[in-house]
Length: 206
Image (cartoon, rainbow, N blue to C red; front, top):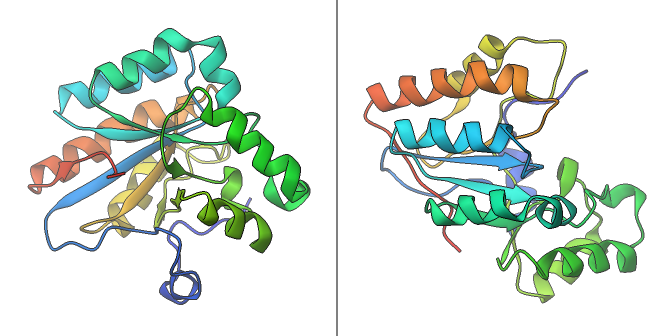
């Protein structure tokens, strides 16, 4: 499985209407978690963030929020941010625009946020245009941990983040059952490493 752990600047400049990172000189990172809420996994993430006085942003699947509303509420109650990740984790490249937007709006019934992240980072030009017209802030990333990749270790995920993250980076993790074996290794390493360097971890602004 090949994927870029960091997004080339040239690609970011091609789509300036998307949020790839936050422009800042301060030592701050934006950790994001996709595909939850998930029993046990999301709770573990919340506890881990608490240990380091860190805040994050959770891009949640609407169907999961319906199933685990109490976990979703706990994300908010602990002071974290949430965002829309479609109702059923739709791949925009394989979904017509009307169906895709319907999935976003259905998810919006339970996730009251203007932040949106496309599953797999994939959406068409028409879908992107429709979302921007609905006043969503489309959040991408500039650092991908790779915790979804079952062929690598959690240590490798952590080292990828340590190698590429810089002030203002938006980093992707996943609070999913599939990613958890790597996440539970990588996240504590990342939190400890960057805290020692004087970084803080904040939720994305709306």
